[in-house]
Length: 209
Image (cartoon, rainbow, N blue to C red):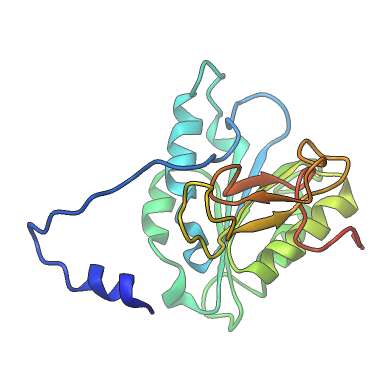
């Protein structure tokens, strides 16, 4: 879309790049204790979940490894062709469910409708821990859903990041006054994020319906 993307697209095999990373903070440790983890991916929001599932199954940072039945991956997109790397996710062996807005694969609808459908059928319990990555409107809906049901929830956000190291203040995310960062009106997505708990930041303001 921009100059940087075009420069990367023009690279050929053997091109040397300078990379700074990893930056920021990722998902909480996905342990095998407590409520099941439900991962909600929307379109290219699938990107951070493959490695998260791998690490959860191995057990990281001294945490007890999660069993496959403690992890649920719910993947939504506009249509079947946008369910990227679905087969790779399915090979991980965790329960994987899909939905599409046009009904071309899985349930017709969005990921929260899929979640409620699976909970109604008893496939997924009511008490879960949510992880979500996808379009901002989807993340806003997930935040409202989590607050309405008293669920722990983490969102992986994407903002316009100028520097990526916390200098330019170009990627602010509003904080929750009672949250861990409540003394500050905003947190930097590139440093304190891109993953935040909905107890600490908000995309919807404080109007949680």
